[in-house]
Length: 267
Image (tube, rainbow, N blue to C red):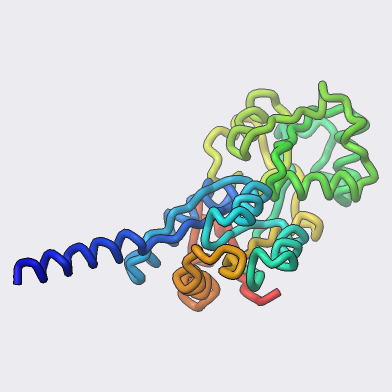
C-alpha cells in the first residue's frame, strides 16, 4: 500500500511538473500588466502554469521558429502570416488591438498635434531635425515605425544619427531615454499608459488608421516541433479568443483607461 502511494505521488508530481506552457510574447503586453491580470484566472481554472518570455516580436518569432515555445502573442501582421505560411505556426487568430502613438515634448514646438496625417508628422521630424528615438530591435513597434518612415517617403539610412538615435533597447528603456532627452518616439498606448516616468512627454499624434496595432495568437505547429504541448497550447489559445478571455481583455484597465480591445477572428 505504501509503495502504491509513493508511485501515485511520483506520477502526480510528474504530471504537475509538465503542466506548463511557454509563451513567446511582445513586450508591450507584459509591460502593460495585462498578463498579471489575465493569467491568474486561467491558471486557477486550468491548473496550467503560463511562463511568458517577453521579447520583441521579431525575436519572439525567431525563437518560435526554433521551437522554444508552445505559442506566441505578437503584433506584426505580415511577419505572422509569413510565419504560418512557412509552416511554423497553425492558425493566426486576431486577439485584440490598441494603437500606436507618437510622443514628444508637451510644448510641441513644431505643432505635431495639428498635423493632418502621419506623413506630415514624420516629414516634420526629419526636416526640423527633431531628436527621434528608434528601438532598432526588430520588435513589432520597430517594424511599424519602419513602415511609417517608408510610407512617408523617408529613407532612415540617410537620417543623421545625431538626431535619429538607435537605442537598441526595449520600449520601457527607450521611453526613459526619450524622457531624459526631451525626444520623440513611437510606442503602443498600453505601454505608455503604464509608464511612470513621463516627465515632460505627452501624446502628440494618434488616431489615424496607419497607427492601428493588432495583436494575434498563434499555436506552434507540432509537425515542425513535436515536443511542443499542442493540446495545452490550443486550450489556452481557445480560452483567450473565447468569451471569458475576450471579456477579461476588455475589462483590463490602467489608470481607469481600457488598454486593449478584443476583436477575435481567424485570419
